[in-house]
Image 1 (cartoon, rainbow, N blue to C red):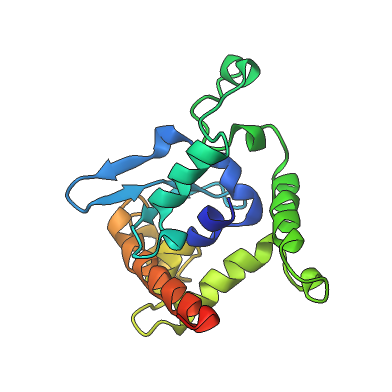
Image 2: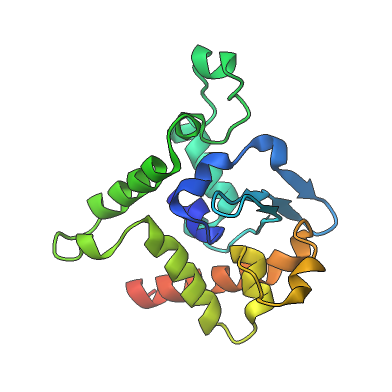
Amino acid sequence: MLFSTHDAVGRGGEIKFQTFNDWSFDFQLHILDTMWRESKRSQSYAMARVTDDSFLFDFFYIHGAFAMAENGLHRTPEQVRDGKERHVYPSLHSIHNNTVAKKLTDIIRRNLPPNVRSKYSSKSLRQAAINEMALHKDIGPFEASARSGHSVGNSMDDYLDPLNPLRSLPAAQALHVSYCVAFQYSTGL
């Protein structure tokens, strides 16, 4: 959940809106579009997911591990009855967005040293991704906004196709380059 939220430059509670019905694989581009739904502005836009050289940052590996090791494909009879069998995270769908964000914050903080825990929250995932895109030499406001869902701030917003996965692809690739650089820097590998 943390990786998917960060990789989508999403808000903490938005991960609950992920459904397999919205996912499609583009055989021409060789990317998975996981369509991101925003809670704040009630809009949806394409979310290109790409492979990564490191399994630690590979969307497909991470979701495969979630499906196998975290019971990610298991659905309770109640979830099936309530029509949640196609939700990626069905247990999150029945709780409020703020509660989902708090849940992500708790996961982050449980894995940090006590002296820095209070500095980070689910909001940090979005903040970090936006900063990573801002630091990349090939990513400007158009590329970043295609990934984050922000407005470019002028009338061109009306003409940009939010459902075109090619728009979010450059930012996806830039984020994956920064993952590798940050990992190499922090581990010395």
